[in-house]
Image (cartoon, rainbow, N blue to C red; front, side, top):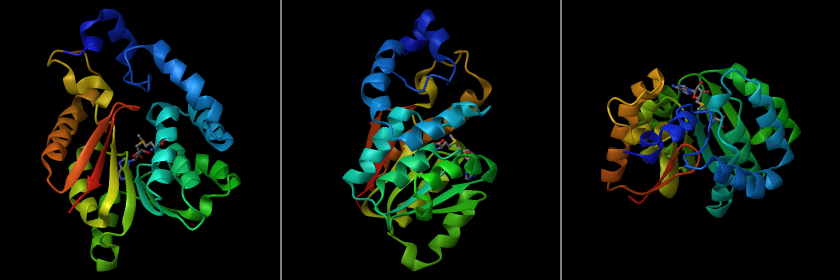
Length: 246
Ligand SMILES: C[S@@+](CC[C@H](N)C(=O)[O-])C[C@H]1O[C@@H](n2cnc3c(N)ncnc32)[C@H](O)[C@@H]1O
C-alpha cells in the first residue's frame, strides 16, 4: 500500500488529480516548481499555462515540471520528427515545438480542436506554429493510415502519448513500427494518480478506477516487451520512456 493511501492526511491531499506530482510532500513539489521550473519557464509556456488554468478541464494539462523535462529530453536526443497524441490546449506541444530545430515537425492529434485553438495564438506568437501539423480526430486511424506507407516506418524520433489510456496498447503496437530504432516513445500517466498501488477498496474517482486496469496492463506489457528498453519516471503523473531497440 502506498504511503499516500495509508496516511489519512496525505490521502485527502492527493486523491484529487489537481496535484500534478506524485511526490508525497506538497512543500517539496512547490520547492521544485519555484526554484527550478517557474524561473526558467519560457514566457509563452507561462502564458499558455495561465490560459489553461481557467479551463474547466485544466486538470488535464501537462505540469510545468514535466514540460521542462520534455523540452530538455527532446534537445538531448536531437529530435526533429515527432508526434503527439493528446494535445488539449497545447502545453506539452509548445514545450516540444520550442525544443525542435526550425525545420522540426510535430504531427499533433486530438479529437478536440477547440481546446487546441485556445492555445494556438500563444504558439503562433512564439513563432513555432509552422512546426505543427494538427489533425482533429481519433489518433488510431491516422496511425493505421501512416503504416500503409513504408516511408513512415522508422521515421519518428519521438512520440508523446497523453490521450485515451484504454488505447495505449493499441498505440504501442503501431508506434513501435513508426518510431525509429533508437527513438523514444513517452507514455504519460503511467502511475495514474498513484492508483496503480491502490488497494481494491480505495476511494478512487470513477474515471481513475476505470482506466487503472488499462494502465496496469500497459505497464506490465511494456516491462515484458523485448523490443524496447524502458525507464519509468515519477515526473508529473508518471511517464514511461520506451527506447526502441529492434
Ligand atoms: C491529458 S489531455 C492532453 C494534455 C496535453 N498533452 C497537454 O499538455 O495539455 C488528453 C487529450 O487526449 C485527447 N484524446 C482523447 N482521446 C483521443 C483519441 N482517441 N485520439 C486523439 N486524442 C484523444 C483529449 O481530447 C484530450 O485533449
